[in-house]
Length: 172
Image (cartoon, rainbow, N blue to C red):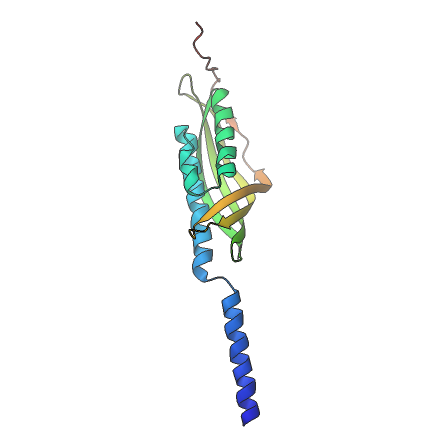
């Protein structure tokens, strides 16, 4: 009987240690929430031409990357209006202070001329398979540190509906 108790005690100890080694389920929920929020703030940033909100969910370098892309489009005379149609989490792995995720996302994009406000290009049903890296700050919040496209596909051709009118700064 003492041998059985010892064996059960060891089994319980191993089970407890294994439970302590894995991240709490709330971390996985937090990571999923940060990615979902990232996509919402990214859409808002492109729409408003202001990526400052990205600092809430992204590292400084990652937020700057998104700002540079938005600025490049704007300098080319385009305001992007993205719409996330579907978000599917394929995998989420959480460790103590890092996390990785893979998502499949379907987006519609509308490109508007900054000069006229007219729709110039529409791209529907772009499907991305994305890899995400996140880090946990000392405050306990998760930040996206990198997003990479593993693949991108679309069954729908882009539809050009207007002509882009360049925006030039006033000359003195």
